[in-house]
Structure formats: C-alpha cells, structure tokens
Image (cartoon, rainbow, N blue to C red; front, side):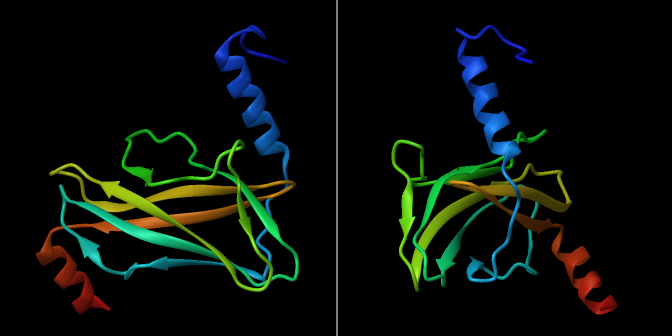
Length: 150
C-alpha cells in the first residue's frame, strides 16, 4: 500500500525503496569489499575524515552496480563523496578484476564519542550487498587506555 499519492515525488521514492528492499541480500565470495584505511584507528571527536572503499569483481560475469544506498541516519555523520553510481549512470564491473572506488566521509561533533556504524547497500540488478562501515571516536587518553587493556 502506498503512503503517498502516486503523483508525488515521495511516492516514487517509496516505490524505489520497495524495489530495493525486495531484493535478496547476498555477499558473493568473488566480490570483495576493502576499506582503504586503518579501521581500528581511533579518531578525535569533532574531526572529519575521508577514506576509500573499493569493490573488486573476481567473477567471470560482468556485474552492474546501479546505486549505493545509505539508509536514513539519525545524525548525518556518514556521506558519499565524488561520483556515485545512479540508475541513469550505473557502473559496470568487468569480469575478473573490475573495480569501483567510492569515497566516504565521516564527520562527528566535538562532544561525540563512541563507535559509530552505518550500513551501505550496494544495489546490483537483482540483489543487494550490505556492508557496514564503522568509525571509533574518542579522546586520545581513552584510546591509549583501551589499547593498554588489549
């Protein structure tokens, strides 16, 4: 059932989300996701960081990445930078080594500390790949104490 009138822009968004969430979630072994940063590093509160995440297709089939979706966030801390795939301009990952790199940006407020996670949905033609990114935010003393405990 539609929540908005069929003519509204939100109805189009609702249809898009229904289609997205009706796809099965898969993580094929021949499609790798790598973050190009030290994921265990603790960053200071109030800072902004950017890093790259790379998809590599090791399959014998070409894969087409339609979009990268970021479900709604209570606090807008994560965002995508640079060109992103779209339905009008999907990215083709060629077989046996095709790659795509996306820049991710994280920004925290001065008083925020903790581990912040967000799910990225890589939307392919008939399935979705879910990938969770996380950033550890804390004061340098707290980070040092945590390392001593390990």
